[in-house]
Image 1 (cartoon, protein in one colour):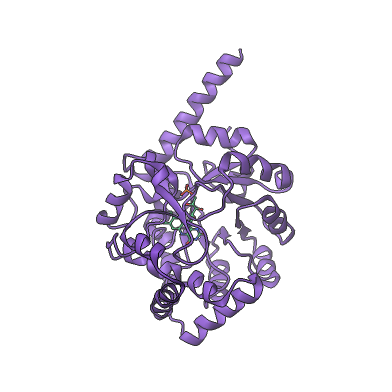
Image 2: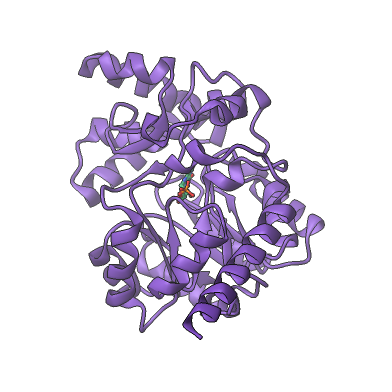
Length: 354
Ligand SMILES: Cc1cc2nc3c(=O)[nH]c(=O)nc-3n(C[C@H](O)[C@H](O)[C@H](O)COP(=O)(O)O)c2cc1C
């Protein structure tokens, strides 16, 4: 039951994907997921350009299993990441905005699995037209940037739209074997989880920040706000978010520019590079330039919480599922428990069906 089109394409044992999370999905977490039989994506969008190759090699030191790299087509080193992925035989890439056709062709010609994340059936159809080999579909309860349609409604829709052409991976709100079995019943080929992997023993998130996730006991308190970068993002409410929600447009833009500058210094880009990326995003997506700047740089604000361990001053992107997780598990225990539970539940259902 757990061998699907997804496990075949990705070369992993179980149809369980650890998604890329900025600052969180580091080589250790990726290797932990892969060694446990899942498939991990390295968060290439927040890794400094000159450390990218080192991190890919580090994953290869820690595991002999296949893994993936996530990137953002507007980041200054996107073309270099594509080259590194091909050079080092990385199995798959994930992205939320599709890279240009020349990048997709280059990746596919090299046999790299292209696996974008989408939030609507029409985006899944477009992604497949552009060459996607599999699509991850994130329902509204998922962490980070997210849509308004819940997983329960979205997955079957996307399976109906593109499931006959490519494997569909269900994301948003998954944490256990019941969820995996439900996703397979909807016709998906596997599940992808962010928040549940953030809350593991291998997670690099500082304990002070992790404690905020553990303390959150109510999924309804993990809200969607546009205050951070103008796009709907699901986060745990904290001091910074509460003050941003009250700030006017000028103050928000100022905060975005300050963080934008710091982010580009961190990733090796210049202010001119930043404005170029923001302009490209503005032109392609018809969103205001100011919002594009904020969107391109949201990862910087996330860093405060995820790297510096200052949960009050950074963003806490999280799926609603954090509100029902009360234990940090190792990747191995997590994946084993999901697999065991899915198999037990299926056996029970089969028994009932006679
Ligand atoms: C802390 C955090 C950071 C994230 N960063 C990224 C990112 O850099 N790129 C991306 O495509 N998705 C990002 N996401 C979204 C996840 O990859 C994934 O799609 C989502 O977490 C799935 O929902 P779940 O949290 O309910 O499992 C992030 C999510 C979280 C919780």
